[in-house]
Amino acid sequence: MAALLEMEDVRAGYGPTSVLHGISLSVPEGEIVSLLGANGAGKTTTLRAITSGVHWSGHIRFGGKSLSKMRTEDVVRAGIAHVPEGRGILTELTVEENLKLGSHLRRDGAAVRKDYERVFEYFPVLRERRHLSASTLSGGEQQMLAVARALLMRPRLMLLDEPSLGLAPMIVRAIFEIIKTINQTDRVAILLVEQNARLALEISSQAYVLEVGRVAIKGASAELKGNESVRRSYLGY
Amino acid sequence: MQGLTQQVISGIATGGIFASLALALVLIYNAMGLVNFAQGEMAMLATFVAFTLIDHGMSYWIAFPLTLVIAFAGGILIQRIVIRPVERAPVLTMVIVTLGLATLVNGLAGFIFGYVPRSFPSPFSVQTVDILGAFVSYRDLGVIGVSAVVLLAIYLLLQRTTVGLTLRAAAHHPEASRLLGVRVSWMLALGWGLASAVGAVSGIMAAPILLLEPNMMQTIIIYAFAAAVLGGIESPLGAVVGGVIVGVTVNLAGTYLPFVGGDLQLAVALAIIVGVLVLKPNGLFGRPSVRRV
Image 1 (cartoon, helix red, strand yellow):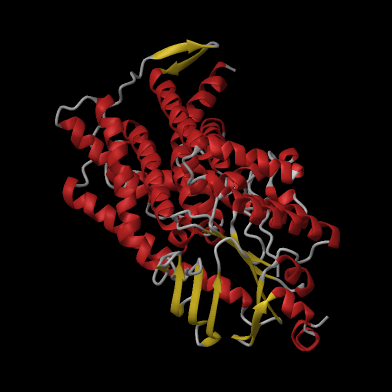
Image 2 (image 1 turned 180 degrees about the vertical axis):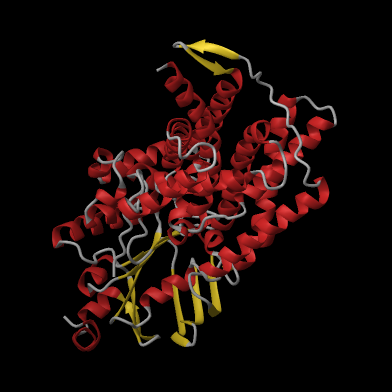
């Protein structure tokens, strides 16, 4: 069976600077795949290519359909939720309004209400603060909001760009637990970009390591984790 | 005292006209970070549309909403045809485009309808009614009522509906909104449509007082700028409050300051603009703009 997301020889860049020099990867239905690598390796750009945030060439297929020439909003409507670098919180709006923007395209009212219950169960702080401006949330709370909003979109695939960035270890743990729960209960596939390789390899089934715009290594997460030389030279721990 | 109440109420009515146009300016400012210098001219053209409809025997209360629908569609059309191609251009380019649009619409109206001022009907009589000992005209009350209804409708649309939510999202955070599936480009067009319709209300309310001709809105737009700046150029509520304050201030200054009279009222508006920019650049309801480096 074909994977949910397939990228084949994808090249992308910003103006004259090319960042991705032919990336190929695939995310199977319902699995977590992590995308590792140093700063500037092209992890964020890979995610941005998928949702058309950057010009790209090559092939990207989602559920068998080409995403070529599609606009960001149409890629998203096709079932991909992208939590971008910086979390994409709309700080002019309230917490609740941010959540509503996650569910605004859904027409299954009863299921939406259930999902809100779930979201508030996962992140009780969002219920407490739902009438406050999203700008008043701490970094960790904003990350929770971003993940909650992505869940409300009911995607088939989530793209998460460094959910641990700038957060205290305890909060990172909590958020990763919930990411894992979402993956297991909803069978949502997740493509996870992370600096924290140890954490990412723990949660994912497969991993790709990028090096200056190319895939340097790929394999099962458990194998990469066990391979000492890979760990030392690419993952830095 | 009686005179004062009278002037204040009459100022609120004028303020309603300013507020509508100021709100139009704010809607577009939020959508593209720029004031639309053609807003007044678009309102004037819409008023000519209403005039034509009424002139052909249509009843005022049918012509009025119909004109708003036409103005709405016209605003969307202008955004798609004129503004969209320069969406990503430097700010100065867009300023020039809206200035050009203003000149174009003004000339077009002059070409079609001529420059002879025409009297425009008002459904409200100029007879007065006694309120708290002050004589207030039904026309002023009507203008206040219509403005209030329109402004309330826009408020409810923006704050209480999903379309309003996506509209605000698209205006403030286009990139993040796209990632949530919002069709940002159409939302901006919708913003232009709404602005155009709200502006048309101000034109239709102003026409019976000022007489309808192509340059009718050119002073009103200055007052509207003052109102929008006073309220904090990004705040719809600020535009409304600013409109009323400017309306009342200008009216009182014209009545009670002998040297202002009827001639220097516009100078009062400009003084408000300068004063706000110097003392409180973010206006009454604006947020200080913080840029992270």
